[in-house]
Amino acid sequence: MHDIICPHCKKIFKVDEAGFANILKQVRDHQFEEELKERILITNREKENAIKLLESNFQNKLQQHINSKNEELTKKEIDLNLLKAKYEKYLAEKLQQKDSELTELKNQLTNAQKDKDYAIKDAVALTVKERDELKLKIEHKDSQHKLQEIAIKDKYEIEIKSKDEQIERLKDMKIKLSTKLVGETLEQHCEIEFEKLRSTAFPKAYFQKDNDSKSGSKGDFIYREFDEQGIELISIMFEMKNENDETATKKNNESFLKELDKDRTEKKCEYAVLVSMLEQGNDLYDTGIVDKSYQYEKMYVVRPQFFIPIISLLRNAALNSLKYKAELAVIKAQNVDIVNFENELNEFRDSFGRNYRIASEKFKLAIENIDKSIEQLKKTKENLISSENNLRIANKKAEELSIKKLAKGGRLQLD
Image (cartoon, rainbow, N blue to C red; front, side, top):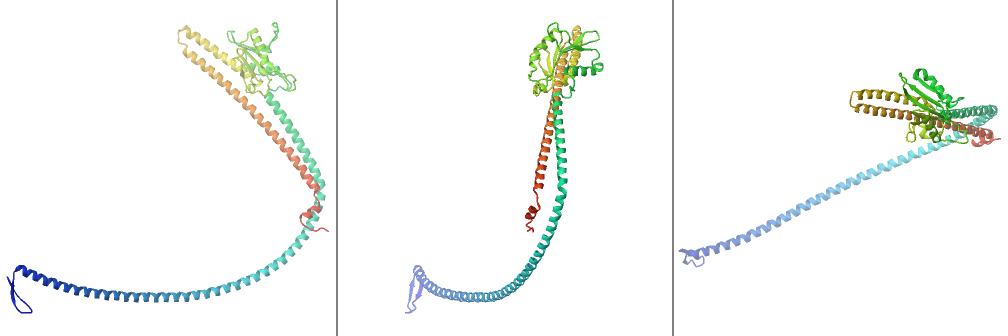
């Protein structure tokens, strides 16, 4: 229990713990509310004062900023006025300078026009003088020019004629390909070529005209060669056929093969060779040695320049074949396998074919080189003819040239 004294009546009364706590709570709540209200009032006053202070400071700073900007604007306006004044002064000076330069240019133009007039007068006088000199030179050189034109024309005509002759010679060389058939027949040519090499290359060979016509026909030449024991190594029946470009009736090589094969058989020759100048321009025959064995056994067609090479090839083949036959006999006698012999024989055949192809390619290359030479000479001829035409045109222009035309071209007024 607690004794409580009333502040008004001074009377003492007792209260228990619960009541005392309730009274104490009421007192405290009331005091707290009073203090809270007082604190809120103080806080509101401080807040208002702070706001007023902030507003005052902001107004001061704003005013300072405005004053600063006004000062800057004033300063820039002053600078702008100064710059404007300087620019106006600069423009005035430039205008004055340009006026001076324009005046000077006008004076220079006037002086240049005077110099131009003087120069035109001097040029006219010089041109008139040159015109008179040119007239004299033209009159002096007219006769020389005509003589030179005649001389050049004759020179070009001689050169063109020479080139034409050279073209004809090359055409003839292409047809005959260094066989030297001028003044000789094809048979004579082949016989001479063989005789040149008989003592060195074919010392034991028989090469004579075929004069036996008992069967009704005969070839031109028969080639036979024998070994040391008198055994025939090789035999060839030759037929030579030539035909000029002017011949009205043209024959081909095929028309002679059958008769040649018949002569070869009757004269018991192993090979038959047609040496032919027929069908010029035919790539098949112009490339070299043509094998006709698919039509007639052991038959060949060659151009004259391959007359000696075909004999050498067939002769070498016969010699190698004889050697292999002898070796084969020895091997067979010794019961030795002949496989190696067959391989060597095949190798020989391949070598023979390769040599034949090489000879054909060289012949074709020779033909192409001659064709190129002919084309080059034709171009040279065309250039010479074109040069003659240009000289004729130049001469015509020189003849049509006159002093009046020259003066007109120079814009001069002749008296």
